[in-house]
Image 1 (cartoon, one colour):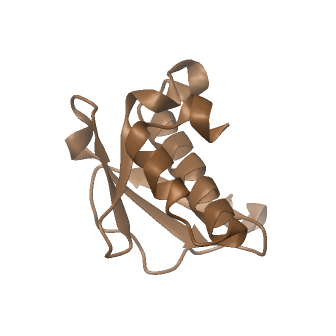
Image 2 (cartoon, rainbow, N blue to C red):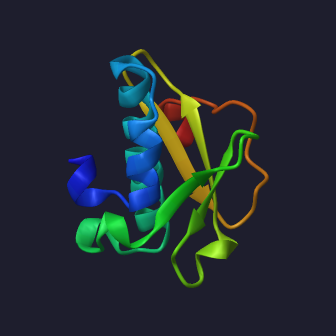
Length: 108
């Protein structure tokens, strides 16, 4: 899947993983960040995932390369629950330190 949908830089990041657990962690981080960006710009998966690159800035935030206009977006990924990832894309780097989980009644 990564060979088909990820950029060359992302494939190199995956190839540098020390073991299968780390490789899975990187894969799902990239996948959820890519999805969050495509949802933020309104295209969903109609746009190819290989047309832009997710870059880890080593401060817990991610940025985008290889996409015109993508410099105005910021991405963040949090561990959510065992086996799940939570990613967000926004026009500002001011993300909460931890996600706040609310139920449907609190939302209404």
